[in-house]
Length: 175
Image 1 (cartoon, rainbow, N blue to C red):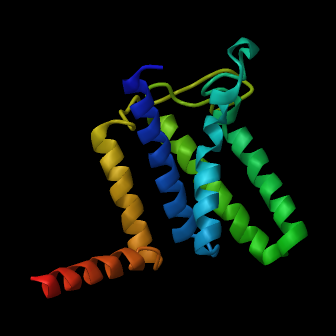
Image 2: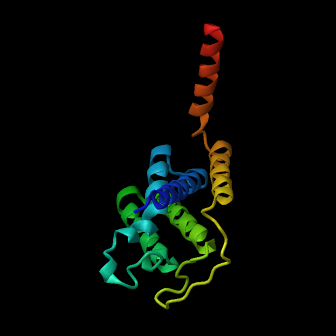
Image 3: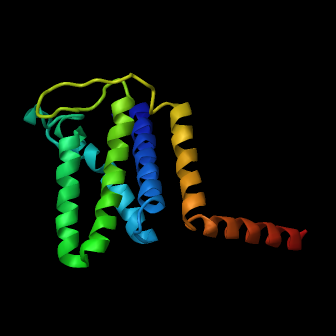
């Protein structure tokens, strides 16, 4: 794999994870650690299709079965069922919502891209407005909105501001 492709995939994966974390933390009742790992895992889950062997063919290809609302629904239902059994109904709802927001964010971002997603899986069809959602401008917007959600709806970034204040204070003392 060439360097440009590796860089593209790294930035795309990081962007999906950042958006997933922001939505899981900003709009559910899950804690910081749970929200972070759920945001990462479920926002990246549709791209597990990169792990499928190429000779498997359709629907086990990139943007196949794992990039469909049906897949997301099955995953979220599974998360809810497991969470009800281990954490009770109230926490299960928050956990399932976190998973739903994270996985849906991935599907929505990719649905806007030129390749689209499998909206009606198992029917093989895609539609997309063809936006450059993994380009520099869109990536910057997605990261900015994600950081804004974390800053406004959680206290997850408080450590960063504390670190910045501490760093400024220590520099002033050394001058």
